[in-house]
Image 1 (cartoon, chains in turn green, red):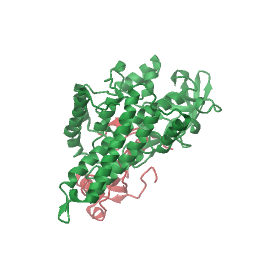
Image 2: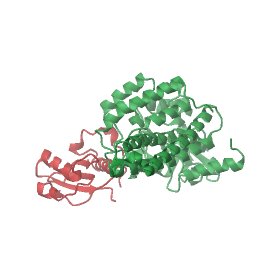
Image 3: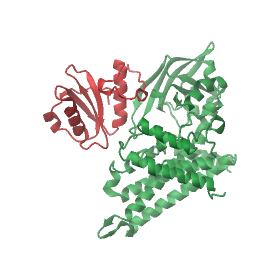
Image 4: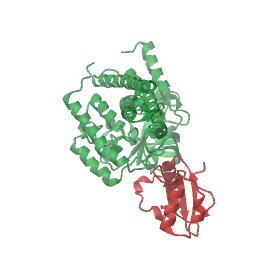
Length: 388
Length: 111
């Protein structure tokens, strides 16, 4: 695997790094430390800049008007875009655009007209409704929300939890069991409108993140027409699974970006902070923390880029994506923790980004498939002989 | 934690605010009919937390109002929740929050 960056990749990385340092950092200096949205006028100004850079809607496939980046380039940029206070969950505050719900690229023409294109134009928002109170790590078995056919419609009853953005969404992808005795082959994906009767946002679920809360949903005889089935009846699990696997690489890269910035800050700080008459940089205990950080970052970076490379080659990358997710989320947490320790009391204040990263990066070991499940995936491939 | 902020109202006066802590959290302001006219928060950049935020509100509105508060580190999501609850109860935002972008206040099925 050749990890030498091409001239174009190098230029794009430099461009995005400059954007973060020159445009995002100064804005954050005046914003609430937990904010996740820019003032509208600033957002529009920065979208104008990213459009000029040719990077707006970078996650959207080329055929739908996106930048058409390969996974490796996208991964390298994800490592840059998250290098600011809000970067883990809102890299550059969404000024590089949003891919919307990737599953909609496989929707039929009518569904694309009603949901995909309005989303890409910024007119509609969607949510992804998979996890239920009965469990999220094993959705194929945990899904208890039921959909029963009634003429040309389906009636959905059940609950979802930890769903982001459902309270502000216009529509959502809801996974429901349509064949109770078929396990993972008995789940269907429905596109539901949030103004349909029977759709309820029951509560906000407050978490370590002060913004980007989750919601709990309830469906009471929610009537959905058959035209709103995404894909095939009983074919929902592969839609969900495909998404989760693909997401793991940029998800890992974002954690790495935060770790890289935390390390940069720690390295700078030890060169100016004195204790007992000498710089922190001269203390071996502190040096060891920086060394451990660097090894954590480089190990996880290698695994993440290896996963991206494999995805670009069109080879199976499930195991590599799982390894990247584990390595980057766990290493990222350790790096932020050590950087915080090096900064002492300042490290835990809201004047520095570490406390927000510390809270948010903890969630990453659970989100997009808990690390324990990632290990299970790797074990299955190892023992089952499908390891590449 | 109840979804609604249901603590008793207190008069918004200099004296009452003096003893408040400088912690982060959310608050509501009401008129003399106990109608909520503003929902706010004291965030991570506030100089004196809830005390400072309410002192600013007192300076802006003058006396004759009431307040209640909740210390909360998740002040942003709690603030948004209180806005949603108010919108769910009254079909509108408090008069002092009218400039809030409607897109940001989502739906919550209360009951």
